Image 1: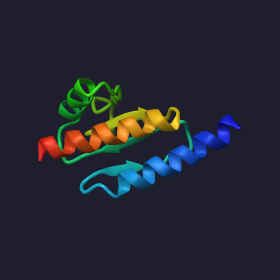
Image 2: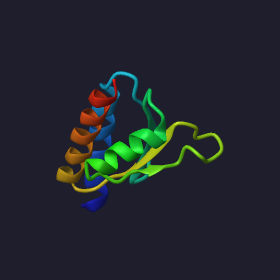
Image 3: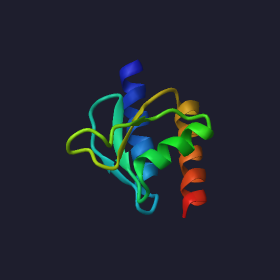
Length: 93
């Protein structure tokens, strides 16, 4: 049951992120995925922390320039991530 929830949530969140202008989502079969925005990863990371959302800045790793990693949680946690990211992107534009 947990696996099916993760799959469903991953698909839902990736679909919502793909609707956001300038956000690129990288396909994943795991309980996390990578994404990038038009803004520097370290800046988005810091702004998400201000919103109470933790993601991992992986932009320092080879081949992952500009990328952030988000782990999937329960639907309400994933919704909080989406809402915070939308808020941050609006603030930065």
